[in-house]
Image 1 (spheres, rainbow, N blue to C red):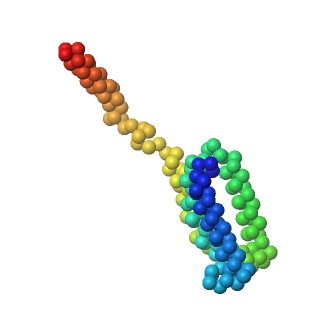
Image 2: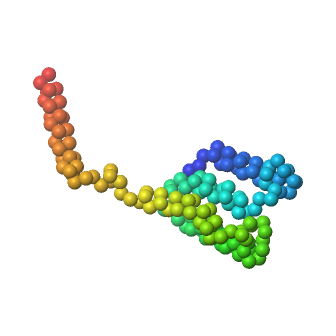
Image 3: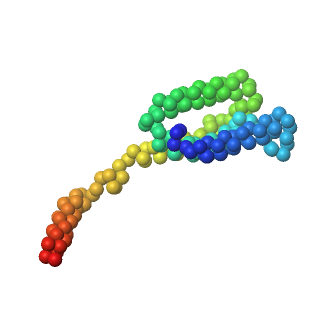
Length: 163
């Protein structure tokens, strides 16, 4: 997280405060022009899951090995929070979640792309590239290149010694 510049944090914090003010105004003050009134957690998930995943994906890709404990903690907290909200939405009747009428298909539609995309990218980033594993026909090229460079250097030295 240290890799983000201060200006990025300021922009992120400003956007978060503006969104919070608009949401609170829409829900609590009745600002109908915001369009927030009547939206449930389900609506917010549809709006934010993919962009948030795409925003954090580069950070996760850069820090997943050295910050693995921190990422695991974030994952555990997220899973526990999700479980609490899901139980509340389905069995305790929390209407603000908007979960009550959603089926497994709805959940798959919401979550497959945002969570499969990072998994596929992480897998692809671990595969060796062509640069990492030269083809068999290229195996002899480093020696040939070294011989050519040696001959060129010998010619240059010989030409300078003749002058």
